Image 1: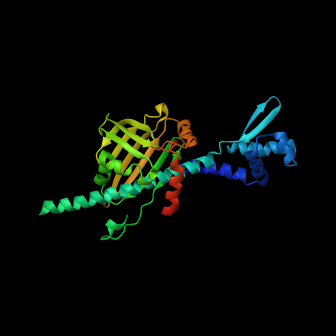
Image 2: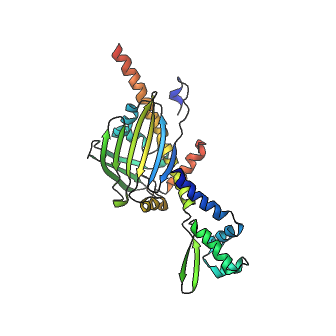
Amino acid sequence: MVQYERARLDASFAALSDPTRRGVLEQLGRADASITDLAGKFHMTLTGMKKHVGALEQAGLVTTEKVGRVRTCKLGRRRLDDETAWIERYRRLWDARFDELDEVVDELNRKEKIDGRKKRE
Amino acid sequence: MDARRESEPAPMKNRTTVERKSEREVVVTRTFNGPARVVFEAWTNPDLLKRWWVPKSMGVSLLSCEMDVRVGGSYRLVFSHAGSTMDFFGRYLEVTPHSRLVWTNDEGGDGGAVTTVTFEEKGGETELVVHDLYPSKEALDGAIASGSTDAMPETFEQLDELLVALGASGGRS
């Protein structure tokens, strides 16, 4: 379980540790782009850009699709962000529920105490 | 809200944790200040469940709550929000008094999770674990991607705002 989280985090952090790759993500956040576009924007060789995109792809942050001779890159499902946000929302939902459940439990506890006292009397 | 606790020292608020345990599982944990029979009662008595399942601040109301809490028995919760209603339903697969409840979540068709709730009493407190097991990684990923959270469908647009507000005001995140 922890390992599962860790492996995913490792891949994402490794992918995000490089400033060019962060720049590529920012760029793709604005619009999809081909590897050639990206290489031009970041003044790199096609081979160099392919490596960066490969790292981002492996971490699930970017997806690519080849149509004809052009490979187009777009942002991946950004699973990490989505999932973290969902887990936090889910946690808040249960936390709010459980605050109310605390009150029900308190009330039942008090009732049990009173009933217990009555039985003893 | 604390007024009725004035005669007792306010107990510390217990922490709620949520973790994606694997590709198919999500687990929620929380401790309650009461014995397992009391907490179990609050999960299996519809009149009591109604009081806490939908937090007051949510702007969603629970129109009805029918629960036939026995193996093979079914349940149905009907929520209402802004003029529309939505049903959540399923069947109980296991009912072990004061320790374990298992039910299906059938409103979403085949992609629904199986929920297991365990109640473990320790020194007068109850450790509660809510475990959702999805049929596949894709089903859980789908639930996450669609933003739905259990009984609170994404159509309840107010939810996000309210939950953010709850988190901010509670200072507990």
